[in-house]
Image 1 (cartoon, one colour):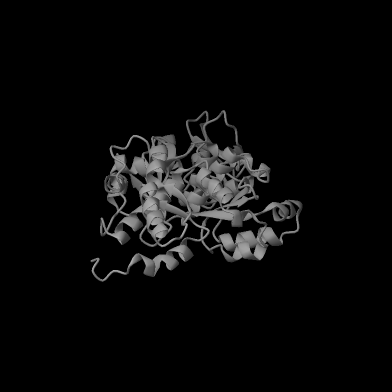
Image 2 (cartoon, rainbow, N blue to C red):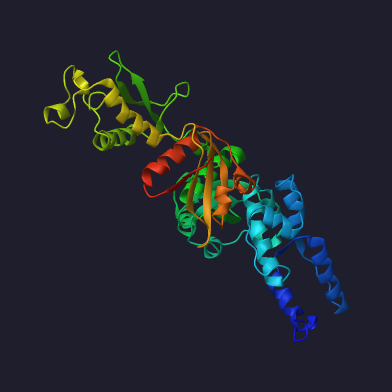
Length: 395
């Protein structure tokens, strides 16, 4: 393999060019960087680059692994590797590991440090230059000022287009962002659901100065169930109350009303018992023979309640163990949103099906995230809107 390989001096210039203004990422970076430095010194060239070590990052972000050698670590994380112990195979494995580490770095310390280390990024660039480097993909974006601090976090199905809107906006917030922005970084998610969950969590944790409005809860109304004096399950859209257990939540009352209207049709429910038709007698649907008469106790509570319970079961993941599988960042990748016993645990990215069915591997890939009312709203709302979403039950 080495007989026909180029000599180092033949590729040295190209190495300098492709690593200029870059941070070298390697597994056991000290070793690789030392080799490069030695070879360049033999040519009389002083080669200096910043570096990041995926061994050190892995020990910090994925503690408790049996081994941190590249082969054993990626195998334990279910990261597919081809051409092991060859330059391309090991490099691709390191790339996939680094992507996982970036996802697990919820404090964004890796990205913020890299901006501080990169003097070129600290200069105030023209907005067009920033936009030119951004992709038209789904993900979360981070707007930084010159010292690396994050001043705004957002999500978009087209990051380039959304940043362009920030830079051409004329409202007060847009103008403040335009004045302070030094760089924009982003994290591809592939899935809009993953982007929504990451945006919500990171705004709450990092509290960027221009995200004040989004730190509050993102829903105002919720669906509640209660039994009336005749034993019928009633449904009601009401103002969200954290002290009461809800079935699902909505961004506004109109969204909730639209949901109930469709549910009445899909599950053959009574307009009166769902709050859509206020009357002391039968509902309008009974008059046109599309309601079985629960409103006037003609249908038994047991029969009617089964259909209400089916609606509740479909729209609530309470006490469920499941994985929501959605789009990944690349064609051969999928995103995984893990829910255990009705509690949202976190998100991860997978390449192989066994990574979903093997709970131990799945838990090591998953980036833990907070379970709160906002995440429940985001997940339930996304499931409602995406009927073909793949959901896998796990034991």
